Length: 167
Image (cartoon, rainbow, N blue to C red; front, side, top):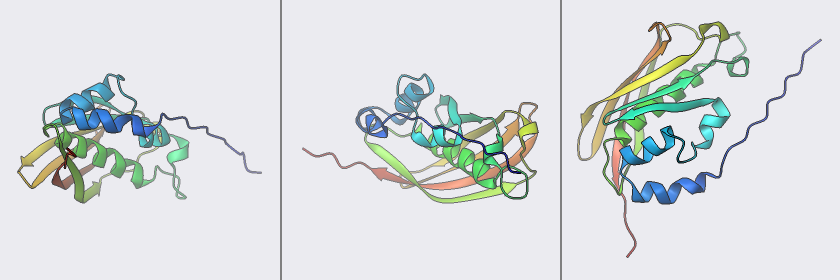
């Protein structure tokens, strides 16, 4: 007999983030989310992770692997690690962007070192900018447990986008 589990997800309207994002530098915007002065994006509620630290060129996200993250082979799906790393690396780059400039991920490469399970405990995705150019930026990230044990590492390339302001 299967034991049914039910999970309820709540999130705030993501449109609340559009105006602040347009009027703050990347660092100011992300720090407001980290301090809970702005609501986190819905993906964090869905996958249960959040940004815990942001400084120029660096971002850290935290999560607790849960049973609902599991894949059919009994470990956490690699998509959780990839999403945590993509989020931290993208936000590390975003933290370096001035008002009116955005970014989008062009490429991400994730290396899975070992499997995550509920027994792993809390994990952190720690990322830092490697290169910040006018058109592209690169970052690297590591997914580690509370003892610093490596579970995955990644690199990304992002395209820098100038925001067109309407007059």
